[in-house]
Amino acid sequence: MLPGPCRMAPSTFVTERLSRLARPGQEFVECNIVTTSPSAPIVATGLVRHFGSGDSLVRAVDGVDLQVEAGEIFGFLGPNGAGKSTTVRVLTTLLKPSAGSATVAGFDVATQADKVRRAIGVALQDAAIDPLMTGRELLDLQSVLYGIPKSVATKRGPELLERVGLTAAADRRVGTYSGGMRRRLDLALSLVHEPSVLFLDEPTTGLDPMSRLTLWEEVRRLNREGTTVLLTTQYLEEADQLADRIAIIDHGKIVRQGVPRDLKAQVGSPTLFIDVDGEHVDMARGILERFGDLRPTSEGKLGVGLAQGAEAVASVIRTLDEAGVHVRHLELNEPSLDDVFAEATGYRLEGADQ
Amino acid sequence: MSSGSAILHTAVLTRRSVRGRLRQPAALTPSFVFPLFFAALGSASFSRIADRPDFAAIAPSFLNYAVAGAIVQGVLFASTSAAGDLATDIEQGFFERLLASPVTRTSILLGRLGSAMVVAVVQVTIFLAIFLAFGARIETGVIGFIGLVVAGALLALAMSGLMSGLAIKSGSPEVVQGAFPMVFALMFLSSAFFPRQYMTGWYQDVATWNPMSHVVEGMQGFMNQPLNVDQFLRAWLIPLGIALAAIAFGLRSLNKRLAAL
Image 1: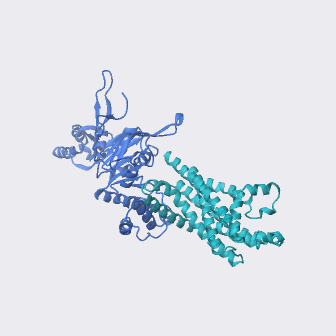
Image 2: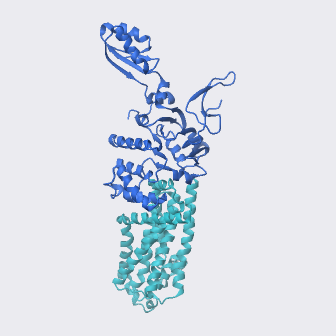
Image 3: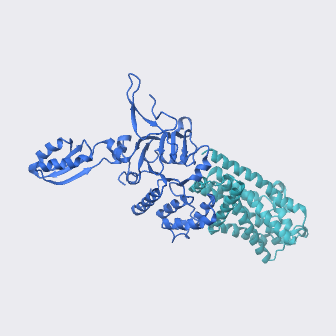
C-alpha cells in the first residue's frame, strides 16, 4: 500500500482520518480522504517541492494535502526544516511546485500566480523590510504595487499604521525599529490591499512575550473581521492559542491535521489528579479505578486517566463526595499539543513550552 | 500586466532606489570625492603637458581635459554602487518581498537602472558646476552641457545594467563590488586620465581598442572642440549600445533567477 493521501474525488478534502481496509493479508492503512470545497481559500493536493537532484535531492515538501476553510486560522506547526516555510513559499507563488497542485483564493498558484498575489497578503519570516525607508514610504510603495488608487491609499496607510501602533514611528526609518515594530509594520504592509487570505510565516519568532501577545491579538482581530489566516509556527502555544485547526508537518509530510482539541483527545484521555486526606486514600483509589486507569503521581496524590474524557470530572467528584471522601485539591491535565507532536513524530519539539 | 503598470512600478521603484542612495552618504560620497580628487591630482601632476604646443588641439587646459575622465569615473563608481544595492535586496530578502507582490518583474531591474540614471544626471551637473567654478569651460555651450549630462546618464544605464545583471545572477553585493576593479582597470587603460596621443606601445594600442577611450573622447569633444556629430556618436551611441546589451543581460539574469524558483 502506498503511503500518502487517498484521493476519493478530485477536489475534496477531509479533515478526519479513516482506516481503510486493504487487500487480504494486508494491514489497515490510515489515509486522508480528500473531499473538496471549491470555495476553500487554500487547497493543496499532493504538493511536492524538491531541491537539487540525484543524490543531493531534498524533498522539502513531500506530498502535502491540506485545505484551509474560509474564515479560519490554520496553524502550520513543525520544527525548523520541516517544510513549513517551503510550503508557504509555494502557496504564495514564491516557489513553483515540483509536483501536485494548489489553489489560493480560487487561483492556481502555478498558472495564475499574478491573481494569487493580488488576493493574498504575505508576511514572510525575518520581515525583510528596507531599513532605509520609513514605514509610511513603504506603505505608499506597497499601495502603488497593488494598484490602490492614491485617494484610497492616503486614507488606508495612516489607518494601518494606527492599527499596528506605529503612527508615531511612521516617518522614522525602519532601520531604527525594534524587532516587534518591524513585524507589526510587516503585518500592516501585508494588509494594504485588504487581502482575503493572509500568510504569516513564523510571525512571532524572536519576539519578546509582550510583542508576541500584541501580534496574536492583531491576528485574532483580523480573523474576526473575516480574513482567513495560515500561520506557520514552531511554538506549540501559539498554535494552540490562535489556530482553529492545525497541521503538524515533519520531514515535508503532514503527520497530523485537525482541531487541536480533537488531536489532543486522540493522543489520550485527560488525567485527573486529586489530593485527599490520608485515611481516605485507599477508598478514593477504589473509586477512581471505576473511571479509568490509575496514573503514577507524586506521593500523597492520586491520578486517573479519565476514560470518558473531561466530562467525567463531575461524576468523579460527586462519587467521592457521596463516599465521604474530602477532596483537598484537584487538577485536570489535558494532553498537550506537545504530546500530539511527540506521538506523531516520535520526538518532542524543541522549545515546546514557549 | 499593462505597460501603464510597468511604467508606474518602475517609477516608484526608481524613487525608492534614489532615496536609498541618498540615505547612504557613506556609499555615495566616494563616487563624488574620488573623481574630483583624481582630477585635482591629475591637474597638478600633468599640468605641464598643456604647455606642449600640440595639446591645444586636444584641450585648452588640463583641467578641461580632466572633466570627462572625472565624470566617467564618478558615474561608473555610483552605478556599481546602485547595482550593489540590488544585490543587497536579494541577499536581505526585500527582492522576495517584491516578488510576493504583483509588481511587474522587469520593473525590479529597471527601477534600479532608472535610479542610476537619475543619480548620474545630478552627479554630472554637480561635477560640471564644480569644474566650471574652477575655470573649466564648455566649448560647445549649453548643447555640450546637455550632451555631457545625457552621456553620463547613458553610461550609468550601461554600467548599472551590467552590474545589475551580475547582482541578480550572484545575489551577492561582494561579487558586484569585486567586479568593479576590472572596470577601473579598463578606465586606466583608456584616455580617461591621459591623452591617447601621448601614449606609446601596447598601452596606446589597448587604449585605442578600448571603447571607454572613445566614450571619454566623445565627452571631451563636448568640453574642448566645436560641436560635431562625432561627439554624439561616441559619447551617446557607444554607451547606448552597451546599455542595450547590458539590459538584455540583466533581464536574462532576472528571468533565469525567476525560472529557478
